[in-house]
Amino acid sequence: MRRLDETLARRFARTALGHVGQEYPNSIGHVLTGPQDALTPREMHPAFFGSFDWHSCVHSWWTLLTLRRLFPEMPQSPQITALATDTLTIEKLAAELAYAQRPASRGFERPYGWAWLLYLHLEASRHENEDWAVLLEPLARHFAAGFRDYLPKLAHPITTGTHANTAFALTLAHEWAEGFDLDLRAVIADYARAQFGELPEYHGWDIGGDSFLSPVLSVSLLMRRVLPLEDFRQWFARVLPEGGWLERACHPVTVTDPTDGKMAHLDGLNLSRAWALREIAAHLGNDARASQLRESARAHLDASMDVVDGDYMGSHWLASFALLALEPTA
Image (cartoon, rainbow, N blue to C red; front, side):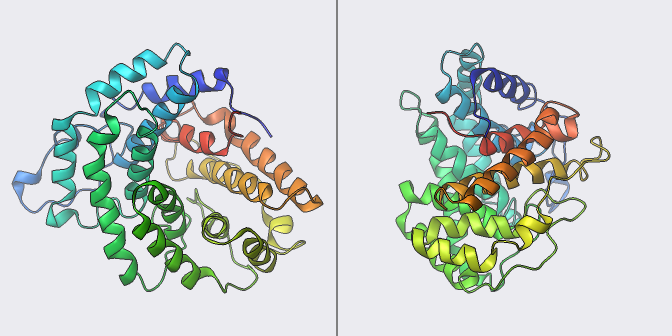
């Protein structure tokens, strides 16, 4: 499996630095309650106005801070530090929180953007000589409270391959909650076990024309986090048994038009699958099936690595998913 090295880190950092401050083009998810709400992206979101949309800007900042921590000596690290200090300020993040607290923003970025903001806060907390985590925490706490309110009402988890996917968001949120909110961690774990614990063998369709997440592998990643190891192995063997969907149908996909933002999602599907397959393989031990999953992860990663800094419809977000997919550094 390919590992993250400084050459790749520089490449991803250059790409993300090139768009976290680029306001246009911009796709906004904004409810106008009157003419006073007709605002530009930067006016609404002084911290996260770039990268084509709010959630991509948030997780591109996660990418930049992660790379800064892992490769502090790379040439882009001082630029990341300076830009983060200018972006993650009291005033700008207070404005982001005020926007999220609007009654009309109740569903804003739920659950995908919520989860990525929590993941960004988690990464910021690892930069001990900076105050970015302290400044991000009120916004993180707001979205954590949103999850606690939302999950008991979500009678049916959303299993689409795009932003509304419940399991993907809960996977990121659960990791944040382990360090910041044990009550939320328990809520997520209980929800996941109740909704997904008794799933039968998977026979569904896994690819839509604009998918960037695998529904079944997203659930698998979540269950890997909330179940004891042996329980997870048994769950996985039932839901994705050897010789089933993974071997028959989980193969890298091809994007026919990378300039089409929806079609470009399929490169994200390759990368998110690679992340899931690599993590699951690590928890299956050293048997032959784990080796097969690692090989599938490698093939999925290789299929989309070249487009991480290609057309803007992909390059404004794909580096984050490539970073998730890569074998972590020692």
